[in-house]
Image 1: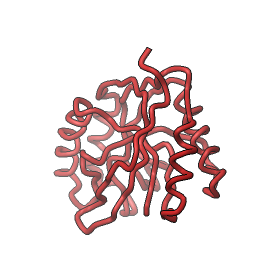
Image 2 (image 1 turned 90 degrees about the horizontal axis):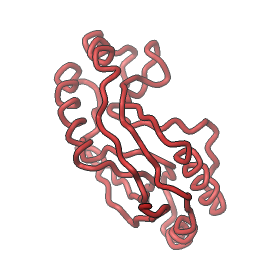
Image 3 (image 1 turned 135 degrees about the horizontal axis):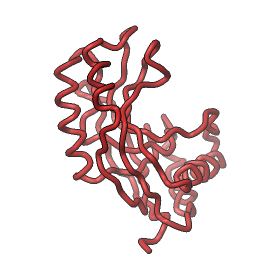
Image 4 (image 1 turned 180 degrees about the vertical axis):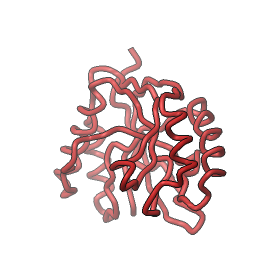
Length: 186
């Protein structure tokens, strides 16, 4: 099983990105664009996972809690690691400080089952496209700069999801294995 842990985004925000992705896909059809229904905020990528670990993994994840919901405001566009060597085109977000704590707590919880600890600092974002070209097409780069301050909406998240990813020719297909409430609505 290929697994990851993520916060889902609601349809209202997904719709804003659907429109943006349609426009940008027309500018650079050669890029590998994420389908709008697959947009999510990754907290931890687990990768190939032995199905025997699923029960213990679900048990560890059910213990992860925060005192308050996570607030996310989606805004801004950019590329990782930089414009000279782009690999990922992303939408940014401003997040309440407890998002990093939540990601770190999940990282520690799954580490108990043998998953590697993250080496890099957690950088919350939505992946919009993977870039395998040596450069960003200039017309796309211009569009990114023009919309770099655009806002897409905000959410208060109280749950995260363990998601299975099946790689298919038409793109990844995601199935939620289990949802975990980590904070109360209050």
